[in-house]
Image (cartoon, rainbow, N blue to C red; front, side):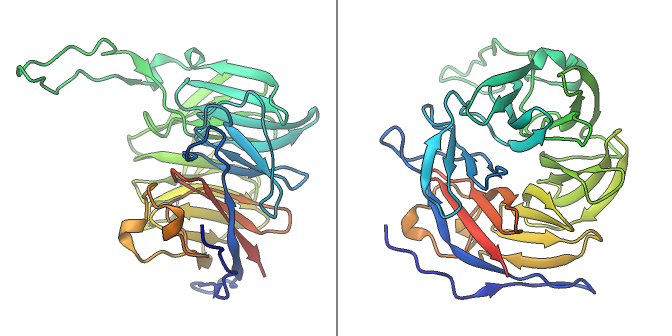
Length: 338
């Protein structure tokens, strides 16, 4: 792979009366190591620990979560971490610092120590079936023109894609690849409620990722409705508050720090919103349509400071933004706040 130069361009745009914030691309920070001697399939997320270490989830059987320094040096794998964390977060509580994530294939929710020990697992069966999608009947014909019965027809399934932890310890999980409901549990994993879904007033069309928006009192949920192309607010009790931003480039990831929310748009852009919902920065914009929302763009097509398919975003302590891609080759960017 050709050595990537530092991006010289400061990438910034703003709208309305919002105060602009500048971010500068450092470089393609991380090319994920090949734990199995093959390319690293990355369809996950990125999170930063309190020590500043960068955690990245992958679909690698032997390295489901990999850990790097902030300058991109590989440090270790998290032993035993699942390889189906589509979205995850790192949060601290009185007992320490933990990884929280739903398993998109295994249909469960787990809490791990940073060294991979499972301290809580919530099975999908804890969620009432009425809030789950049913596997539809098979409609495809075989070579004989017959339609074979799907043995899983009618089975209730979950495809949970992201979660976060409220200030009181409650857990909120989005079923973004299935029902679009948000499921709420207490800190011990007891099921409390479900809300959201595809019907009004929510009208979600793939509530892909969520975060607890601590910029408000009380805190609320900020969510990216990917196919609805909008960012929304929902109360922690499930009331639909409203749309923050619409007509986005298929927003797929969200993180909150201080006054700002970073939104990763899978059609090739990152946008930062202030508390009032005003755009204070856009960067990484990719104007080549065939390169966006595409996980097949190899390193020979990468351009410093230009994103292909943002799928995870995270802030470090000083406000720099890390962006993980939807990529067969494993790619993480870093954009430094100026």
